[in-house]
Amino acid sequence: MTTRKTSVIIPVYNGQQYLGQALETVRQQTRPVKEIVVIDDGSNIPVRVPDNIAGIPILLIRTSNRGLGPARNLAASYCSGDYLALLDCDDLWHHDKIAAQEDALENNPRAVLCYTRIGHFPTNLLQRCPQYPTGSRKNQLMELWGRNYILPSSVMVRRSAWWRAGGGEPTLSGVADWELWWRLARLGPFVFLTQPLTYYRLHPNQMTKNLYGMLREEVRAKKLMARRAYWLLRRLGLAPAMISDSIHKTRHFFYDYMIYHQRGPGAFAELIHAIVAHGNDWKAWKAFLRCMVPRNVVRLLQAISCRT
Image 1: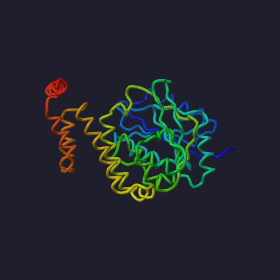
Image 2: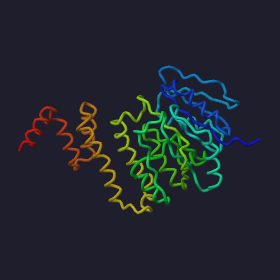
Image 3: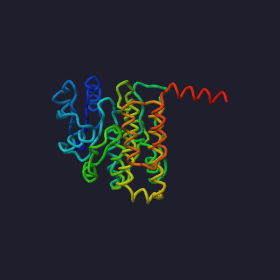
Image 4: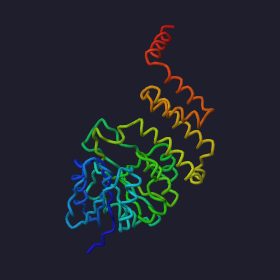
């Protein structure tokens, strides 16, 4: 009998309608998993799950809403498998995913993490899938510094590496995984499987639909990444000035978004905080002053400028 090596972690927040399909894709794996830990992260209506699926034990834990990092950490503390496979409750897996990733990590003993290419569900020809870097580890990490192309549901990580890295970051929400990848990257290489073995569900309630919140979190995540993976970034060839410039660009993009799309008390609070923290950043002052001007005045000035 094949030894079951993988524990599956599924955080749920108001996602009961999707959970059944996610569990079904775990049940259909050609290589069975050891256990499933479902974390109900303070859903408005408590999550319900069966006791087991095809002989796979399922543990359901309900907590107050604390975010993805703490939820996954709590789940990991109950796991006993050699590997942790992350699965968001609204995503799906190909039936060969577990077998392919276990084999990949077995064949690459130095690797700490394996991720797959993704597809979309339902199929959407207008939705572009992420572009994945090819070539050396340096190419992978340089691209990862610029953007997070690794979907959590596509990831299998060694349980020992998860805890050596410190697990999920509790102070981040939507982009906590991006920062975690960098702490794991300090421990060893990643393996990329080019087959689309993970399916990202498209629906209106996705966390990524909150662009304002995601951009705000990206600014915070990038500062943490720069501090915690500083020497790894230096070995990749990024000078301190280049690291700082990249953080500034991320922050400035967030300012621009607030100017044109997210005016209001929240934006004012963010900009005031930015001015206090970065008093010599003229972009923060410019964004604050632009937000003080009513939209109709801005449109009028733009129209006058176009005529002249």
